[in-house]
Length: 243
Image (tube, rainbow, N blue to C red):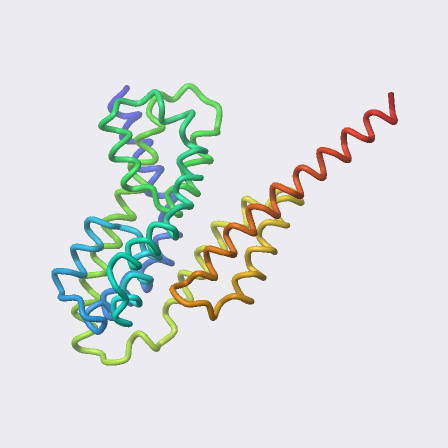
């Protein structure tokens, strides 16, 4: 029974992630095509996908490498862009804290936006399953294999199809991220955070080193927290008047 439960959780995690994987396919291919043009070798591009495994940070790093940016700035920029994973971890910590350390390390490495989006719902669903970590593992493994296969395809395609990076295939990833965000828009603070972050990102899009994304993230979070505090304050005020 336990073996079947593990396998079922694993397969369900992979199945629920499949629609998001489809959106990531062109994104991974484009990364492979652009990496060598930015100065990375094929081995360097594959190494980044194998050991970094962070799509947006890899694209930013490739752009900075192509622009001749010094490596401390590349490391700092990608670190800040990936800082959102700290929020993901804080959300999942109550569930993952009781797992053995080896599971924590594996799941932390494979925590992508897509895997978080599907796994947080599974962790929060009340049932007696003791193998929900296998669900997250199924999601992350499918994403990992897909990302590295697509990187390899992109490296090969980049040598055969010149200019594939300008085909606009990266829009599929934008659509995938929109699909990730929409289910989490459940109240006004969420809407406020998304609208502020999106607007600020557009306004500050021209800042160097992708700093506009950092500003948008900080202000979006601040707007969401402020909106929630305001709602709680108004609710408390109504309660006092009612008393």
